[in-house]
Every structure is written in structure tokens, then in C-alpha cells.
Image (cartoon, rainbow, N blue to C red; front, side, top):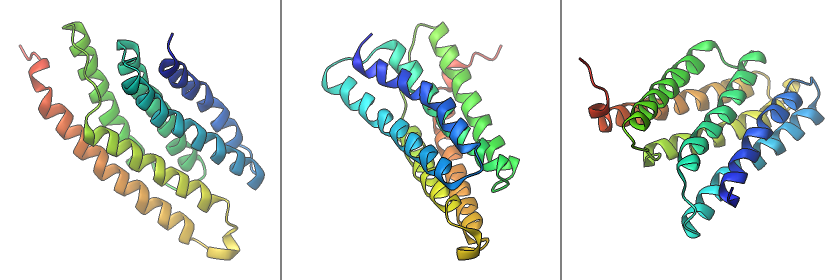
Length: 183
């Protein structure tokens, strides 16, 4: 197993650690959860750079990297739901896109093809990660300082993520429609 794939696996391992800290009702735990999230997000950037620069691109990496991203961002959106910051709709829309893309990837794999993430897919992931970091930072600010503004800002950021999620999903489906044999 190469270094890029090890970083992807590390990201997967960090997801339950992130959830555990975010589930504790204390600012110190949220700050540690934020640090874990940022570290996990950085592994996404690093594994791709390492894989490309050292010619370590593997089928496992093409499959596991986007899966690890989905696990991390979905965990954060579920934390936002648990905290009452967002409702189920944005999470549902994001998950529908992720399931659709995963289904297409499975269809491609059945045909012996591996589909790497597109620009829009990567942009969607970066947008989600930045929005989540800002949302967690806002969770750490006491309500008496900014009131409901933190929740409102996070909701707006999440809906911006939904917009890019839908754009990337439509692009992905359009590009790979030929893999869907509707007979």
C-alpha cells in the first residue's frame, strides 16, 4: 500500500474520531473536532498531490479517495443536523448526489472502467470542507456573542454547497450517461 492510499485510509479512520469529539457538548471538544476535521481534509489534498507527483495513482485510490471524502463531509453535515443547525433537506440532496455518483462508479467498474473525480466534483468537495470548517468555528462562538447569526451563516454556506453538489452531480451524470444501459 502506497503513501497516498495510507493517507486516504487515515481520513476514513479520523471520521469516527471527528464525530466522537463533535458529539461532546463542550467548546473544547468542538475545537478538537475542528482540528481533526482540518487534518482529515488536508489528507485529501495531500494524497492526491502525492499520488500524482509520484505516479502512485491506483484503482483503490480512485475509489477510496472520493468515498473517504463523502464519509467525512457527510459526518459533518449529520453533526450539523444533530445540533439543529440545518434540517434534513440539504443533507438529503447531497446524499442523493453521492449515491447517484457511486452508482455510476459501480456501473463503470462493472465495465472495467474507473472514473476519477471531475473538476466540479473536486470543487464541490473543497466548498463543502471550507463551509464545514467555518460552520464548526461558528459553533464554538457563544450564542450571546452573535445570537442566531452563526446558524444562519452555516445554513447559507450549506445551501451554497448544495448548489455545487447539484451542479457536479448533473455534470457527472451527463458525462457518464453512456454507462447506464437502460434496456
